[in-house]
Length: 225
Image (cartoon, rainbow, N blue to C red; front, top):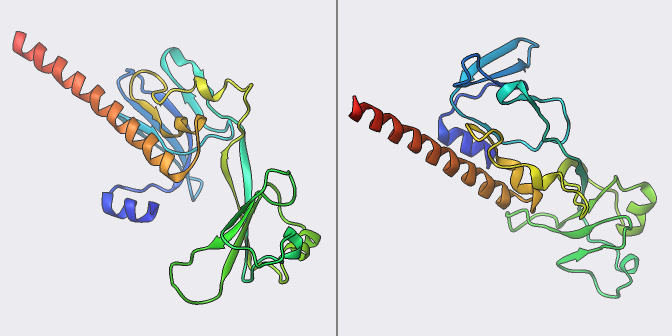
């Protein structure tokens, strides 16, 4: 999805790791600094900046007004997705019939969920996937499935939610009340691809209203002159 969106936007894609975002010397724009794939240093100024990546470490330096360093990183939960070409063993799940659909667990065991993976092809082998907070060990794999897994992927899936953690609630969509937006602020409520789209749309609407307000102020000034 991200690849197709990038192609349709005709945007200029600069591959590198963003190291710093700060207001420019005249405070009217933002300077983005990055290290490109070849370790080359790159920087460029922009009117608006949309930060569309979850911040789960503190490596990115964000400097807002009055040279204040802003910290928005929070802990994220790493999830492991393990794929199998056979359904789970019925006996391991304490059932007599082959399991179907999705199986959810809150018992804190070896997995969070088991479910069939839709390959959208309508043919081919039946694929099952397991979501877990840590890699499945060999004993867990043998207990749940009669065959070895095909693939395992890991990613930082969503924030670590804690009822006593006020950190996520303090992070706004607009980080400086000006032109620096954080699409992933919505993950304080829930995390999913659909939520990411809502967060991005919200930031774009905020930026649109801000630019519209600036345009109206300029027009009014010109009319007085």
